[in-house]
Length: 187
Image (tube, rainbow, N blue to C red):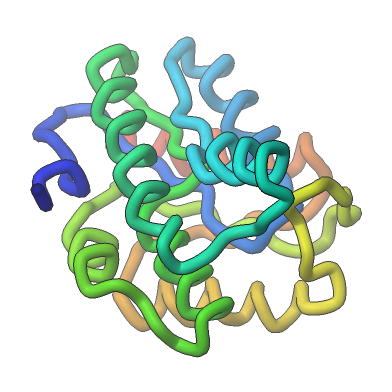
């Protein structure tokens, strides 16, 4: 059963866009995938939670986190097979773990935590909160951006994840990300 939360073996370079809501992760994921003529893994939680909101007018609950994690890994494993040397991930299970702890008083399901820590990526891009907040049905913490950003950064440092902080406008972030990805592609 737990296998559905595990990464399948792959020789592509895996990059994760990581950070609080409304910090440009999805936009940058698409830009990077186009630049490298590859694919990107969307954030499964957005589709899952938007459907839940549309059908039940309910937001995320702890019981939703394992189905979200399973869907995220199913997408990642499927798209890794289609990637061209590099796979851009709009999120990962470590981000799901951060949200679980932030929203549910420090709690994270042990299965989610296990795979959030076991699955590996080559580089994280931590997206800063210097872009304008964009409201939608799911985003709900516009006044807690600094606290959430610090939580994300602390998590990367706590688990010794290699990361680059991305600040500035879309073009600046894209150029910075390309520079660091190229260093991985051409060591």
